[in-house]
Length: 137
Image (cartoon, rainbow, N blue to C red):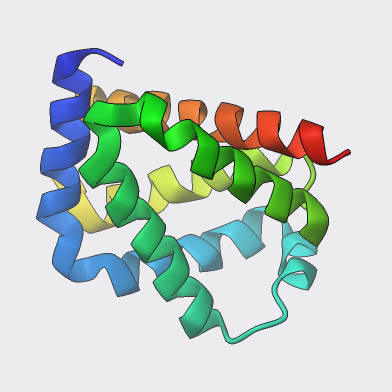
C-alpha cells in the first residue's frame, strides 16, 4: 500500500467510526445476500459478530501503517476461519460486501481513490488470512 492509501483508509475509517455497528450490520446483510450459504457459518448472535468485525476493522485502520506486524494475528484469524468452514472464494465476497457497506456509510466520500485504498487493504488482509488458513489444512 502507498502512504496515500494508508492515509485514506485511516481517514475514511475515522469518518465512519461512530457508525461501525451499523456498517457491520449492513455488511452482514449484504454478505448473506451475495452468499446465502455463509449464514450457516454464524452460530452466535449477529450483534455480537457485528461487534467483532467492528473491532477488527478498528484494529486494521489503527494498525495500517504497521501491516507487517499484523500478519501473525491475521494468519491466526485465517486458521480460525478455516476451522469454521470458510472457503477461499468467500474472501472475495466478504471484501465486496465490506466495500458496499463502506460506500453506504461514507456516501460521496467513498470516492474511487478511497475505495481503491480499502480494496488494496482488504486484499492484503485476505491474503494473510488465507496463508494462515493454508497452514491449518
